[in-house]
Amino acid sequence: MTETLLHFILQRLDQIECPVFLHRELERFPEEQLRALRADGILRETSRATEIPRPKNIPSGEDLVVRHTSKGIFGVADEEDYFDPIPLTEDDVRQYEISLPKLTAVIRQANGIGDSGFVNHHGLIPMGKKAVDGSGNIDVFFSMPNLDENEFIARCRRLEQLCDPSGIVILTPRTIALSPENRQQMKRLGIITVAITTNSSPNALSLDWLAISRQANSQVVHYADDGGQVSLEDEAIKVPVNTITEEDKIVVERKKVGERIHWFVNGVDKGHIFVRQESISAKITEILYDQIGHGWVPHKTFMNACAWKEDEYFPASGEPGRMQRQLNIIRKNLGVAIEFRKGKGVRFAENIVKSK
Image 1 (cartoon, one colour):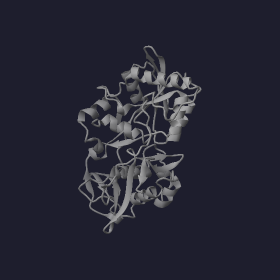
Image 2 (cartoon, helix red, strand yellow):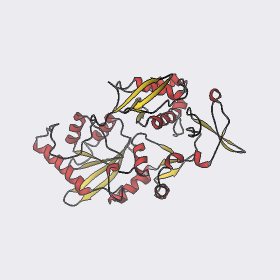
Image 3 (cartoon, helix red, strand yellow):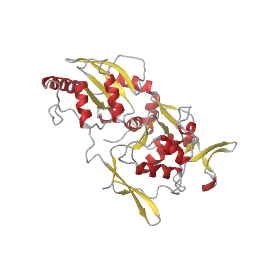
Image 4 (tube, one colour):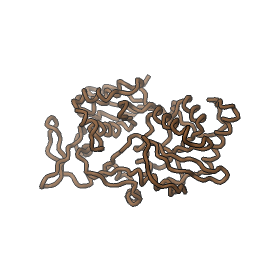
C-alpha cells in the first residue's frame, strides 16, 4: 500500500503523544493531501520552529538554530561547527500539529458513530458506541501512543469494569505487537484492536464494521466455550494477531568503516550519519544502542550526558524539548522507531535488536 500523508502522521502519533511536523518533511506527499487534512482541522499550524535539521546541501550534524533578523530568517550553527548563516524561508520553519479532537470527530463521522465531545483518559479516548446490524452496540475507543505494550494493556484493563465484554474495539494508528501472554489477556477481556493504517477503503478512516463485529463475536463465543481458557495456539478465531516475528525484527549494527563509525539497519549502510562523534545526537544514539535488549534508559542518563536541565529536557510549553528534537533527528537518519515515555525513559522499539 502506498503511504499517504494521513498514514504518516498517524504512525508518528503512535510513537509520540504530541508530534510536531516540519513543513519540509511533508513535502514528499501530494499537496492536496495536506490541504485536505488542514481543511478537516486534523493538521493545524503551530508555532514556528526554533531549531531545524540541516538542509541537504550542507554537511550533516546538529540542528540549526533559527534566527529572525531584520534581513530575514537564518539558520546558524554553534561555535564549534561554525559556517556562514544560511538564509531560510517561511516554509523551512513552518510546523504543524495534530488536533486530536478534530481527528476523533472525523473518525466518528466516517464510521457513523453519533457521539460527540472529546476527553483523553491518559491515552485512551472514548469514541462512543457503534451500532452494527445483528451485533448490537460495540464500544469503540482510540488509543495512542502505543509503543509501550504494558501501558497499552493497562489501558485495556481499565475498560474491564466499564464496558459490556460482548464487544470492545480499540482503534490504533497502526498495528500493535503483543506478547503471547498479552494476546491471551486481550481475548479474556473481549477486546480486539483495529489498526486504522491497515485500512484499504477509499475513505481511509471508514472501517468494515461487519467484519469487525464477526471478529469480536467469535472471540467472545470461543472464550466462553473454552470455559474462559483460551489456547495460545488457537487460530480458529482468525483475528489478526500482532506479534514480533523474525520478519518484524530490525537489526541495528554499529561498525567502524575506515576512521569513521557507520550505522547499519538490516544490513543497509546508513553511512557516517554524525559528523562529530562527540555531538549530542551521536551520544544519545550510542547510549540507546548499548541499552538494546535491556529496557528503558532513564531520562536522567541523557540529562547528565548532554548537560541539560530538566526544564530543557521536559519543556513546560508542551512543545518538543531538546531531547525530542534530537530523537527526531536520529529517527530520520536511521529510519527506526524510538520510544519516549516521561514516566519511564527512552529506548529503541522492542522489535529492534543487535546482530548476533
